[in-house]
Length: 146
Image 1 (cartoon, rainbow, N blue to C red):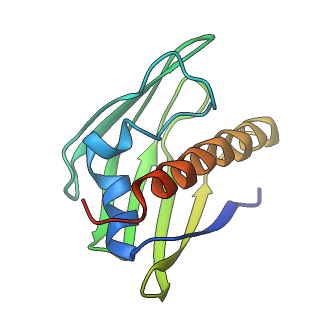
Image 2: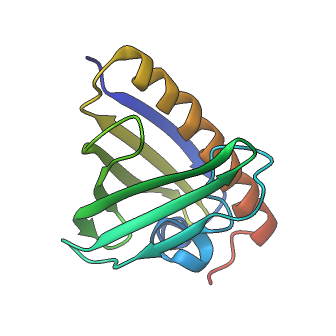
């Protein structure tokens, strides 16, 4: 099955975008697959290779928990982690951060190891909403370093 690949350009530094994916205090503000969650996500992580993370998205239809382990971290350029939820076990997500100019960064999100096309499509939609929320979060923050 084809991997899921999404690319987005964000109006911020590579460091700022990387931190939005690695710091729980920032992740809670955008990491949810809806434009109208009941409340911010709950995020816990041990941001180190072999460290665990847990994201609970508080959606209108209920709470959805995602867990995994960080497999690779290359500061400000790459984060790779496993991704498990109620519909998928141990898929692999790879994030690449590429600075296009001083305040413009391209994110490439690649996810592999889907059990079915239906689950892959669900993740295309979910990640799309998460990245939309991340764009709004970055815009509201003005691309500033935290």
